[in-house]
Image: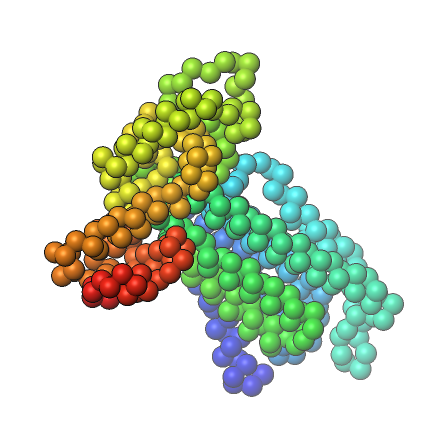
Amino acid sequence: MNLAWLFIYFFGVSISLFLFLLLLTKKQKNVADKILASWLFFAFFDLILIGLYGSGEIQKIPKLIGWELPFPYLHGPFLYLYIVFISGQQKYTWHYLFHFIPAIIIAIVLVFLLPVAIVTTKGYHHVAPEFDLVFLIMESGLMISGAIYIILSTILLYRHNRNIKAQFSNTSKITLNWMQYLVFGMGVIWAIVITVQIPPVLFIGITLFIFFIGYFGIRQVGIFSNALSTHEVLLPKEIELTINPLYSAVVDKEKKSDKIKYEKTRLEDTERNRIYAELTQLMEDQKCYQNPDLTLGDLAILLTIPPGSLSQVINSIEGKNFYDYVNSFRVETFKRIVLIPENRKYNLVSLAFECGFSSKTSFYRNFKKITNMSPSDYLRQNNINVKI
């Protein structure tokens, strides 16, 4: 084992162990933290085995040959379940354990298979040729597992982004964009496994992947937790309900269930128009959009209606989700106040903050999305001089 490989090996193993211990000692761990800690725990052993293969040291411990196979079957399920719980899409059911069945089956098969499959030829330990097909099947299953969980994880992230835009006016800290990069990273690792099959390259890929999942996972703020905000927010499954137990609405017991969907509880046009009129008046009078952390629940409380009903109104009349609805108010406010001469002593970002935007990036992104031009182009087109 050369010096460079030795350094990479110890760095990879050490970082996975360090991140695991860091999560283990984290106070107020949620379920997502526990899933991530478990993932890092198994990744630690996976990296050790890959390192032993890459360095050739595995030949000194023949009893470990073949035991690298179950661990990759765990990465997909752990990634999927981590996204499920961190994005609030969980159902708290024991059915999640089914995701680990393939890894368990592989481990059980190896218990009986390896004692007879591993042979020694001229001092070199390897799998006997007659068992090549069995191992090929297990490796092929690994590729299928990886592809399936990448697809499932991508779907979860899409649903998460759709949900937070239905409830939050500022999504900068809760978009889980970093998870999208990690899902892509896992796809790259699977591609390396399929095409390159060089242990050092695979080891480096997994090491970087584990480092980023651990680093961002520890930094990730709560999304649907009290730690994020004191405002009223709902889990994805709850946003679909037009009845919320926090409100004193009277519900027919025959219609009451855990999954009352929009389709089953559509608002009447008269009621919908009434709510919309009150919402518009509220936004104009109290300028709620100036609160950068405004949520759907905040407005629902002020209007004393269920959040689901408010979401219906915004979607059906405005044709927008909550995120776009609130940010359209902010953009229009900016366009209005930037015309006032005395405001031109402030720079562009200061005016954006005054309108409720939480960052320059958010302002530029939403302004261009709503007006089809950048703030700079808008100012230039209207001959407005404001410090950029």
